[in-house]
Image (cartoon, rainbow, N blue to C red; front, side, top):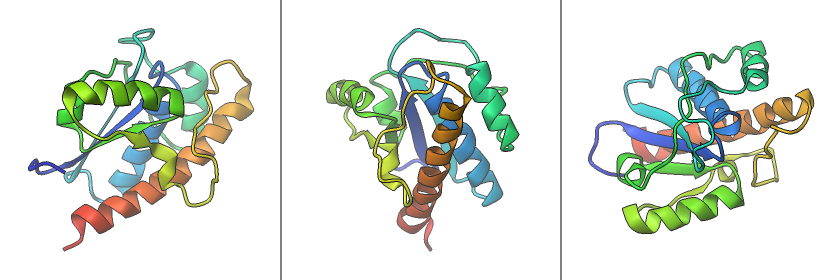
Length: 163
C-alpha cells in the first residue's frame, strides 16, 4: 500500500459493463454498511475499450438492483498503466484479464491478482462472463462477487485498518 489516506481497490473485467461494475457496486455497498467509505476508495474498469462511457449492462443492473445494489452512476472506462500507481489492489475477474493487467503492470508497476482469491465459499477462481448467457449467469456472478467482497473487506480490515 502506498502513503495515501485511503485503501484503493480497482475491479477489472473485459468491457466494464457486467462483472467489474457488479464487484464495484457490491463492495461499495459492503464498505458503506461497515462505515468505512472515508477509508476505502473503489472503482472499476475494463481491459478493452468496447464500452467507454456506457452504463453497466441492463441485465447486470436489474440483477444487482434486486439485491439492493445501485449501479446507476457507474460508467465504463478502460484500465490504464497509471492505475497501478493509483490503486493498492487491482483485481481481475478472470485469468485472461489478469494476463492483460500483468502486461500493463510492467509499465506502471503493481501486482494485480484474481478477485476470487478472497472468496471463502467458492472454489472457482474466475468470475464467468455472463454477457452471452441467461439471467442465471448474472445471479451466479452476484453470488461469487458477494462471497469475494466479504473476504476482501475482511482482508482490508485486518491488514490496513486494524488499530
